[in-house]
Image (cartoon, rainbow, N blue to C red; front, side):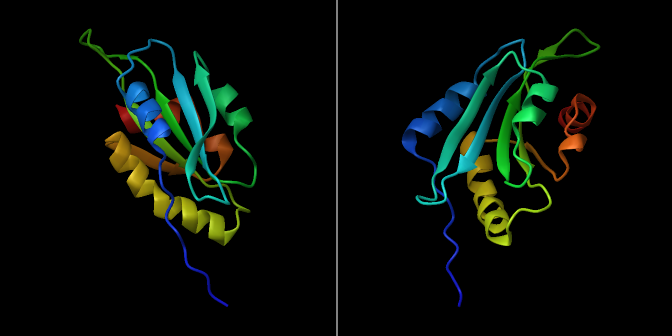
Length: 139
């Protein structure tokens, strides 16, 4: 028995939220956790954070379900500039069903394209989700 894999869509209201998030310039770390609704195959908002820490985000990630995490925060460079990088973290822990992993992996490119991201990467183990790891990827 085979099933067709439907790539998820992004509803218009979420597209608008993502656009606002992308152009925000908050000095605090901000994050949006997204999941895919298994019935509608839409990418939906799971949780939204303002002035959060990586530790708080790690605690919110489920142990056996994938998630997309959009992260933005201010980085002060040695030359005095401040940048506000935005990145997508595809969190796919061991133990996820292969169907879930394929659905999320197949939907990732459309999310990256919608958010116009240049920084995106995978994390399989929640313990690898650290400020040092993120900084090494976005700078």
